[in-house]
Length: 345
Ligand SMILES: Nc1nc2c(c(=O)[nH]1)N[C@H]1C(S)=C(S)[C@@H](COP(=O)(O)O)O[C@H]1N2
Ligand SMILES: [Mo]
Image (cartoon, rainbow, N blue to C red; front, top):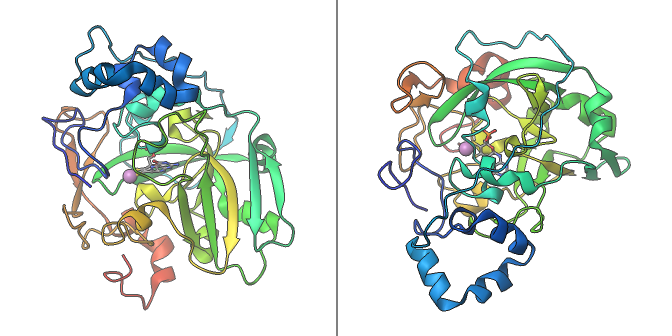
């Protein structure tokens, strides 16, 4: 894993949770869009068809006139929402920022990649399977889930392990409502969330170094905490693909990587499930990953964060102190009573 700085990547000097070589080639960035799309369903033959010279030129970034083509976002649908008690008294991040500065490694590792690339994902029809330790395994159409409970307006702080943060108005309902409806067995101790992993819709999925499908998990009490949001929208609209449409979770007291996107399966287990970032580097990305200013990442401090809102110079976002449990200690700290949070980070 590499830590890259602003002179090498246009991400404002963020520490990136990147795996693999800094020189990784992202073909979507250096290939004319039409050519790329014509071949994206069979990328391997495309690359071999390019031949050695083509590949070398690509690696050196030498192909002329191959600007990154901006893809049209799928139109977002307005949602009917209801107010909630979950608000924060801080500047909300502009919608355009939340939808253009993303981590979604299935669509590339640069912050701007998901917006450029995620249009190849089809979010309807969309089925969510419920498996494992439940009374009866089931599959739900996402539109059924979306209508199951009123979609609340909940504004949460959102803190990435890379030490940037936003304030985002999400739309959804407590995951606990869904969990109660699917009747997990008493033996279920964890719930795992698996993201879509489809090479046809995610041509770059093999390039980032993460092992598909993206997997995240919570202990059952964490999943049942009312703060944990089954999320279908933000800013009063359906989620953009790059935000994890059509359905993701948001776990606001944990680092952002716990909040899995574009979920296709919810799996109940009695053992702690394997999770993507923890599997890749357990010394950097703990299973719990509760936001904790007193436990630093091995390569950077977690004591403060760059707040990406509209205030200040966008090149030098304001720094704010990171709060224990991202400011949600009153709601969640009791779940970890008696645990050593430096060991169980
Ligand atoms: N499937 C999937 N889910 C994912 C990720 C990912 O790469 N793939 N990135 C995670 C990380 S590291 C963060 S910070 C958040 C980012 O969500 P956002 O792009 O909506 O801000 O999504 C999380 N969920
Ligand atoms: Mo993240």
